[in-house]
Image (cartoon, rainbow, N blue to C red):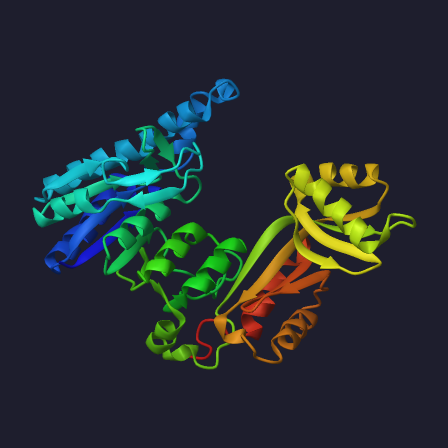
Length: 412
């Protein structure tokens, strides 16, 4: 039995035209001999009647009084409405569709309301329906505890649902349908000439998501990677093939154009503040200073990134909205702190840069040619990130995109 999972995002389902387009995708899968499992998000975005943010607006003034358990009961309503509506459309097209909650589909989670983790998926309920020739339409973003309490999976929860079901059912592929034609080499709003990747690795797309690209949630990618289930990002509204996300050796084989291409994408994260903290005399030495700095910020729930430590200075970035609190904490501890707001992190990503000399040189050359100063940099096996002034965002991203031959038509 060939099983595929088809997940449809809220923008795909917001209007009748989108729901009809989604139904066509399901019908195509059935005609192709596959047994589809459909996963749906809440319909629309903030302001639309059944979007999750709209539902939360009903209790905006009272959210401080509501436990997370009750908020989860409210938030799951959007997906349940979507599942019933999509089921009605599929049945009108002659398919024997059945709406299911996450719990009814076998998704068991822990009890962390609002950000639950999937403990296991019992595939039997869905397998029985598929054997009967039925089309399950499963609510994304939610599950159920061992005690029967409804939970939500947090940001990117519907992607996580789709990946978890794909893994449990040993699906041939998990199709993530959205309003774009795949994963782009950069944000097309910043780089109009960005192109859709034919293939990408799990690692690359996970890093692009972490570094600010709006693709698939890293948790969903991790689940799919562990189970070796391919993911495919496609448009609900066009016949473009989309982006296939799989293991590195498969990506290299399927996209011959990857040969010699060390970078496959450029992502960016705006809204950052650069901290430079000098170690004062008598602070107990560099290690003691580092402990005080990072422990005090951690205790305040402030996440730090792009950490660069030397005996004389500690540099790192935080989100701008918490920069004031971070500065106050460190100043109260006696540190000499300078803060530069309005920064953005630009990151080049690619599994091809592992062990490849000269990648940083190309980054520096590209940014220098665009007259963009690097304020701070960090790297990993498959990423190099540079902090730059926010007003240079577009210039920096375009320079890196062009410098590594990612512009449409180059290297093809």
